Amino acid sequence: MQGRTRWMLTAGCLVLSGCATTDCDPAHGGFIRGIGCATSGSYEQRQQQKQADVTRVQQTQSGLKREYDTLNRQGEQTGAERQALEQELAQVQGQIDALNAELAQSNADTAQLRQNLKNVQHQLDLLKVDRISPKPQVDQRRAALDKRIKELEREVDLVRKR
Image (cartoon, rainbow, N blue to C red):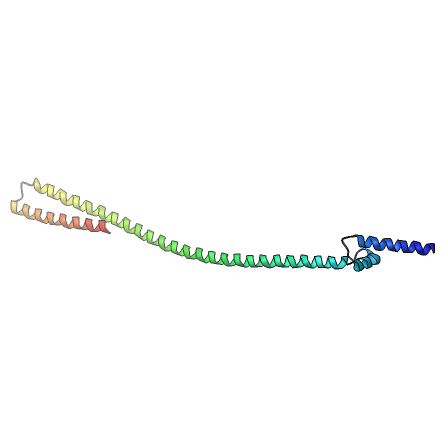
């Protein structure tokens, strides 16, 4: 009987040692440990814990996928808004370029008109000192130059108002 007692004691210790672990996996640790895990409920508890871990990871994954989808939609919307703003910027830049060209032309026109005014004024100054030409002819040229000055002044005003 001693052999039988010894064997039962050894088997009991093995069963108890199989139940004492918290990491009960019948696939690892042998037959005795597997039986101990199965009978003590440790294996079922371990399975439930693993299932809870899987469920938690799946929920986290699902939340991250929703967040990714939301961020992706926002990115697409932001891209569309950016493209619209870039088109608007291009239009405004085109308008600015057109206005700058118009301003440059206006400045050139103004400079030309001022030069024309100076030329007419110089001709008037020459008429004032002209002692050779007959008076009616000088008066006629003066009237024509005064008329030209008024025309040039109107043109200058028009160029300024553009």
